[in-house]
Image (cartoon, rainbow, N blue to C red; front, side, top):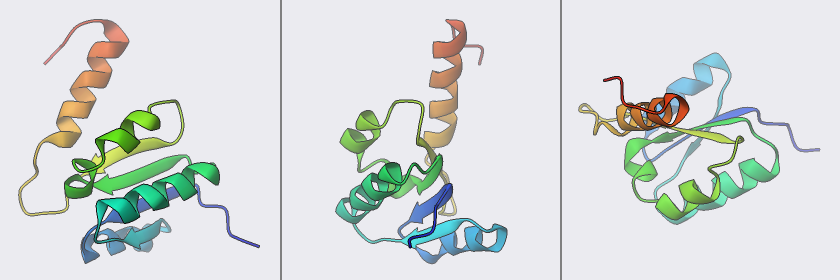
Length: 104
């Protein structure tokens, strides 16, 4: 029987392994195609939250569009020395969508 994954982290380098320390299932993947496949599998398992490293997040826009519904929530995370600003941009978009205007 396969374990139920509620929260997962996907990244292209070993920095996502730090999520293991707090009990989050991690996947170290090299290609966007592998990330798309894992996101599909996690969504079918009814995973609630999926953290994705910014570099992979930027390479899978079609998959992100496909899972824009309530769950799974797909959150970009910076894993390199310098963030690309994707996470902050998504927060701004969500706030603007929720209240109708940009407060930043």
